Length: 100
Image (cartoon, rainbow, N blue to C red; front, side, top):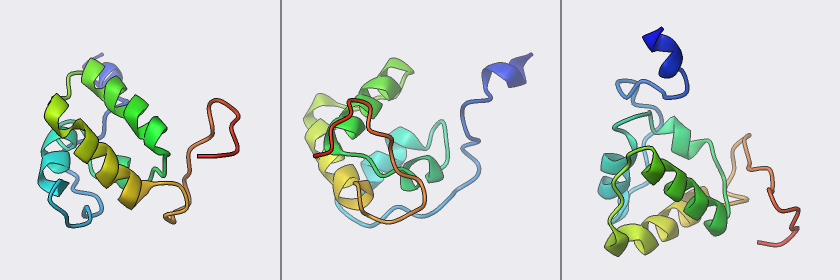
């Protein structure tokens, strides 16, 4: 039964793809890889608004993202994993907007 409740989280022991270097990278790694591998980040290519919604969702699940770091997190994620940054998986636009 316990494995069912944890099915949506990736094992943190699986390292996944490395995150690009940058001043915010260690904080992203610390906040995000406690529950899942970096692939959960690197395989997504979201707009800044979508990353903001994702951070909010993760905070609701227990991730600690200090308010003072939120803008830096969003800048790092959008710069490195925004739309058009490559990869097979891209976000499906939730609101039907064709612009970012």
